Image 1 (cartoon, one colour):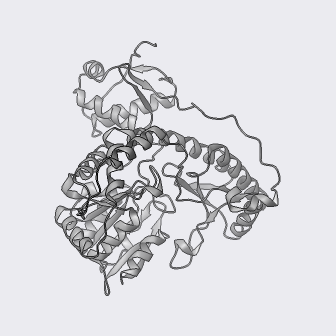
Image 2: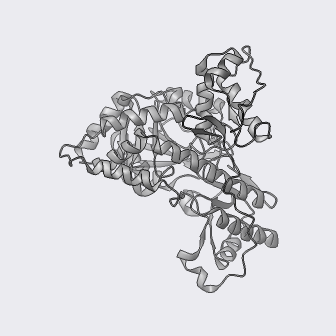
Image 3: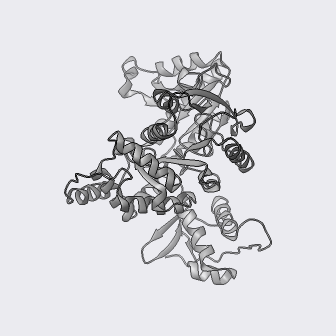
Length: 461
């Protein structure tokens, strides 16, 4: 076993940056530049706190952040170690051969469309254990519209750790996923004569759900950072937004614009619906805390296990003020909507044992490798947006070449989506290119598919 590494860390108490953030930033840089090598053992939280003259909490929280991001590995009884970021990275694969017509069948295509996670690499033993334990409980006949109390407690704790959300169980309602959460919000806050703002381009499910509940849909333009606050109308009842990683353009709403957005909501009385759909996956710095944490009275936070575990699980959460959560639960009960009790219990088991967080750390590393491959191959031939987070990037391209690239890629066995598609817009497209999803394809297939796309961009450019 390697000796504990000595860390020449310098922290400034005069800086406006919190000590925990300074420490996690230093460690992250040291691991990136090789100062800290894979497998090296870090000091204990108590030892490093004594060395730096800070509270143990500062070190513990920094380590927890880096554990969550996948930079560190913990070995029971042995300590804290630098994770091997290159582990399991395969050798470069050759360029794909000319497409065989039989490969055009959907099941054989390399899927580089967005919105789908990798569902083939999970802890099978943990999954079976969670369901066996859930099956030990008898089925209930009086489902709580808020969700299982213990699951709400565990989700609140998870959100406090992972997203710095100041949540307690009274803030949490368990949903069947983002679509269900949107529908419950629409049931409580929207209806005929109400106006709902949705990012343009943006998530079509939000438009469809709000429209189905009778609301008028108002497209709200976004730029490279996210929703443009200055052009938001004052008569919206609800605004749907994706501030951590705008879907599909990939922007990250900066703190100054977040503050202006909240000021707009307070002035107009609108409620902001924050979809935190893939905020756990950040590859450059720690994610910004959720918008909800800046003003819980004006924001409803939606999250889901669809991206972190699998869409088929069918569990998500809605976080809001206790009064609003109770009102949504009351309206939910009126329409006999519920989340499966056994499924909730299985998620309880995954959270209680730490299995879900271990899976999240593992997948953060896997997605980071795929994201790196996309940037390496496509970065030299086109401009990329949103490549520091999430499970997709936007490859900006001239509108004239996009249809030809889509056809050419399909002929060579790669399925793509264009941001020009109607599913992302109510009006005409203002940004053109490809939305490259790297969640559901293996690293080898991501490389193969991106090489096909890069060759087509070069040939048609």
